[in-house]
Image (cartoon, rainbow, N blue to C red):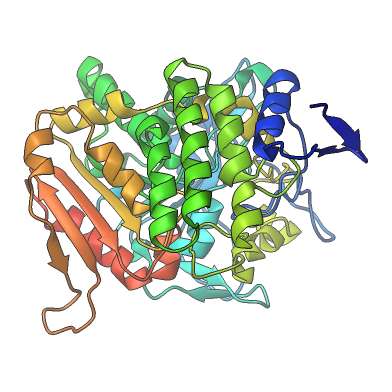
Length: 488
């Protein structure tokens, strides 16, 4: 039966399966379209907002190379912020001079003043999501209200820990590169640039280098976090004098291994009532097709299936999931759309006085759409071998999931962890799941925990994909206990 275009859209003949035609067309000719608004508003590049001088971008690498470390630290101190008095540092670290690739960081020393406080690296997902989202919406020292005023966050991770936010990979947020070929295409590229940034960071902030270090992040950072963790492990073996004191990694609702995760979508959505039995069968059929593409290393075709079924990023049309459920927000199935405060930071950061304070000058604040296009072939690939090596080398690993999440739901993470071939796999699979309460006297249950050796897996009730936003107290508690009390 023939396919015809009407006003730029596909029209289907009687009895034809819509997704079948769409996938065939996308694979053969490629799909382009407007990225639809979900977690990260694809707002297009944002320039300077307001009148005045935004200052100049601060590049620390020349100062580092010249040995002017104290000057680099002093210059990176963040200027005035409205309604907040807090010491922090920001600027650019050049990770590839020939490409003019520079990564933006914003660093908050622990508010407790503890000189030995562990350092946490926070990486957002996306791919192409700015870590400023995590800073302003999830776990940073402040958040924005609807008047774009800063307010202190009650359960800020920065109260007990020094937290480093990096816009990763290059092309994300305020990070940038001068050449298309220098965008990250895979996790090796991501790890290489991140390690260069971290190496320079710890030269400037050398007093923090001996402290415990944890790589953390959520969503697509389920790829980034294992990549940089293993890179640090390898570099520490080769160059012990430049050691980053890696102790473990923390991943929230992380996409790690689509091959094992994809088949868990359909039964999960059926069991929570979002799909009926016919819709479940349809989703499961296409999941099998996507897994077949993954196994044959046709990652772009697998991503096309994923995008048409659920993701809805690159086609310009609503995903099948939306058309069946009416839900446009798959990060918490109790919500139909994203909370409005998720977008406040996009209005705050481009302001001329804020740009000057955080040393980005007139540099574009990127929405990450180009990053996603450049790294697309990596999305359906796996980091299972990296996670295996990290576990087998004894590093602590926390994998947490908000139990209201859809896009990387708890059953997806469990399906993945049950196939990671580390030396503790059998013990983990047989470990007893425990009930977790914030306090022993609580009636409410915070979540469920499974522990074996150095692996901790947690499902958190009452929260979705953006767990530190949905359940800030529970998110902070599990991270705090994991870092400060868990000693396998």
